[in-house]
Image 1: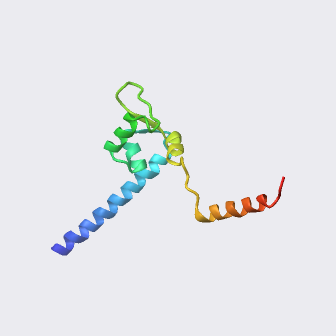
Image 2 (image 1 turned 60 degrees about the vertical axis):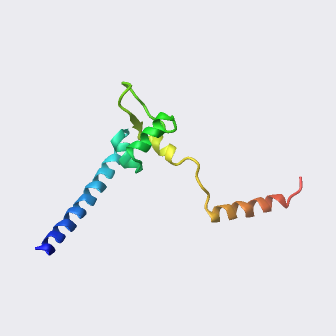
Image 3 (image 1 turned 90 degrees about the vertical axis):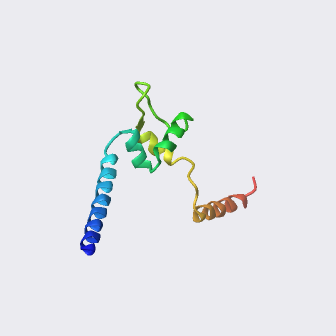
Length: 105
């Protein structure tokens, strides 16, 4: 009996993972996200999201002064701000700048 319960639990967990993946795929087709969808899309909690919006750190809209909506395009840009260069990119830039500095103007 315990083995059957364990197998059912495994099946339920697998189904839950599949549902979460389908939700993420569905979010990729939307252009406007609700608060809940924003949290799923970014992985942020509601509490953190409320802190970000109240501090005006994340782009959002409040069309009726209550509900919060997010432009997926703006969120993507916001999430990708301040890119960190890889070590190989920094090395390439360093080599390029050394080649340029060899020439005296």
